[in-house]
Image (cartoon, rainbow, N blue to C red; front, side):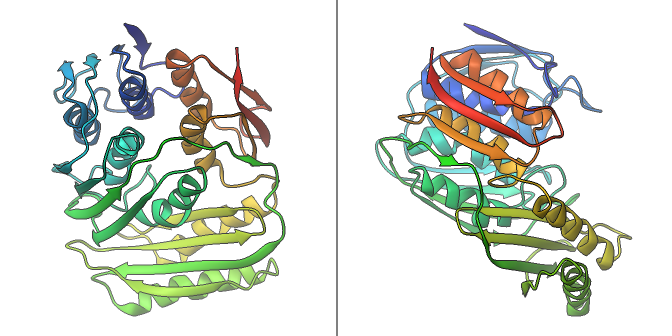
Length: 343
């Protein structure tokens, strides 16, 4: 049985989620201690517990230690079964992270699956639904995945109540990815979204973003969207469409946070990306390394920033697979990642 320490690396929930995915895919049981040891509130919180329960449900796993605040867990996977699954986190926990946990295992199931997850769709410290839809999923399809995702209703911190759905279809192989540069910029697209607020809030976000990007010689095309939702919030997202790639950054609103600050956070992050070399944003680098470790050949890409999150994820992958992964560069700097050089 594989033994993991949840305090290693950045010490967050990604260690557990990646382990769940890899355990199912490789049919290897694991045990983990010190779950989320480096977080303000360690142990399993609702979204992490739901990831465990969702992973267990799709493969009828034997699990022990799966309760709130638990810092130890044992997971023994069974065989993945396609089907229709519904998961309710019960809080504003990230629906997107639960979906990513079970996405690859269900992609290798014998038939298609339909998933509905209720909770937070646009919450801090996780990829929001639009990031998955416009950035992550296009790359997953590029390497072989076959799926569609939908936002039914937006959900924010602290109420949650949002809902996403997904149809995941069978695939046989994951193809390698070779992308060292993004190439020439084609267009910068933006979304200024709002829920249960005056439209002028989204207009202010859009206007501030336009001002900041035009200073950099960038003319974005920004769409205003109104979300169906129980709660109140806004989002400013920027998606760069390049010759060979995409780059995506976003910022979320919060109580007492001016629309202009939301716009500035998103614009500053995107401008920082434009001033660095890298095939795509650093968040996608972290999210692609696991599926590419399963590809039928070696992959290589350049990230604008090596993060501790990326290195931690690589450490988990090495615990389950014999695939070699090499990283050149220092944390916080641009770097190269090679995946799939067999030992």
